[in-house]
Length: 216
Image (cartoon, rainbow, N blue to C red):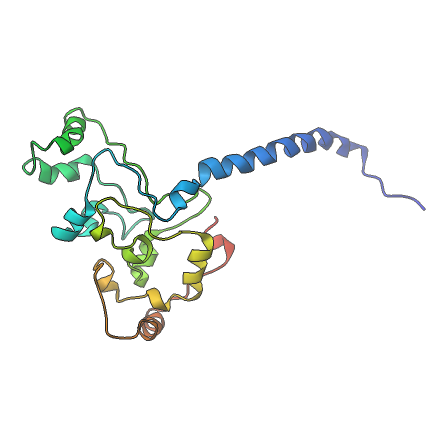
């Protein structure tokens, strides 16, 4: 019996296999350390910011619309962190002597930026776009919680793959009229599953669950 033998030219791949055996585990570890911070995916994660910005005050008590600061949330993948100019639109004349806002004034006067700490930071190998979710009628509150009641923003949902898939497979309980997406305190007397089923049919909402939806 003649055993199958690989051609001699394949011997050149042997060193590459050794290198791959060493580098692959290193790559996987680095991917999880730098691409997916376990800290940012933990419910309750609430990092300290350079300025103690209160969403409870701005979005809650003052009733500021989310889109005033997060201006690209309806048209782009990311929600956008507001530039200093957005903050200074108000704070050129409001709380101008507040010591808490000193870093804001100093950065503005020096032409610098503030280094905000990401709270909701998905792994780099995951793709997520805010725009289609909002268009479908998924509110900010379903992923971020009642931000308008938070003094310091924290992670409210696990943001895991399983959690996302649960919603994609059964979106009805999370759908609301698109006009109410930014109304974080919205409620309805209608059964959420029945309402969601009706909205899903009206708007042709069929979330995908294949790998390429989130991993591109």
